[in-house]
Amino acid sequence: MLIHKILCLPENENICFVEESFASLKNNTLTLQYLGNIRKDPDALVSGIKDENDNVIGLVLINPESEESESFHAIFTNIISSRPVPNNSSMIFSGIVKDMKLQNSYNTTIREFSEAVYEYFSIELVSRHLCENCHVNKEPYNMVYIESRNARLKGILDKYRLEGSILEICCGNGMSTLPLHNMGYDPLSIDYDKCQICQGLEHSVLDPKRTIVIDATRLSEFFNINSFDTIVGFMLGTIYPFNKSIWEKMMVESVSILKPRGMILLTVNKKEEIEILKNALEINGIRGQLIDNTDSKGIYDQWVYAGTKE
Image (spheres, rainbow, N blue to C red):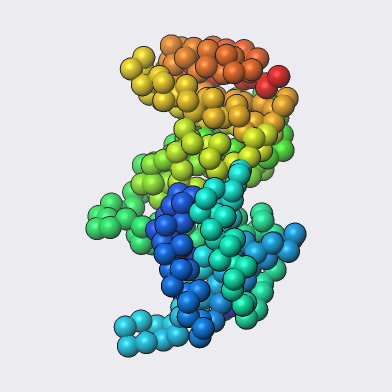
């Protein structure tokens, strides 16, 4: 894993981020509990992880082997809780860092360490370490990824050039991510459904370093405003009047982290679905067009919206 490279450790070394999921890094409940105890231990062997600005964005504690467990490196970080604005847990973390005498330091960048965090939780998910009593079996590749769908979406993508940093919302199992990768794009892909994400990771369709399980209604809690040049979402839905407030919230959040003049490209199955998304986007400063992409099969990507942030 990338985290092994950052810490200059062989791949067989045990490494553990102490929080139970990526999203839990936002509040760092376990992190602060453990660090409160570690700070009082004069024998604790703690090193720092520094970014390109020489800020400590992580701590590494070496846990020696005991009768109960093998030795491992426990990692604590405020890289998620510090963005876009440091929350209370991030500030407490920073205060604890100032009180600690660090044995050593490892140098990285914010981008590299972020990808190491994404990769770690992706691999933990696929390894079934984040889902208690999971009994979901891996599905055959050809039951999940349909070549005709890839070709149809590629036809849409051929009409638009996706620029710069790309966020793919509601990526599911990566069926839509596959043609993006095939066309040379490297999106950061997110979805709230960890089982779907797990399936995409199992089939190597989703990139562990570029995939996160988070809720698209909370994007501004995890990303700075004006973070992405392009936001895409393919076959979003199903969108009904009774749940449209959730989708409207996703659109508001998407616009907030899209750069000025950035593009948003969405597809759905039904016209009434794309109209809900279009209205939500244009109320929040997107200007674009609704495109009829219907065919005789009437299944995938039937309606398209392409817009630009003013």
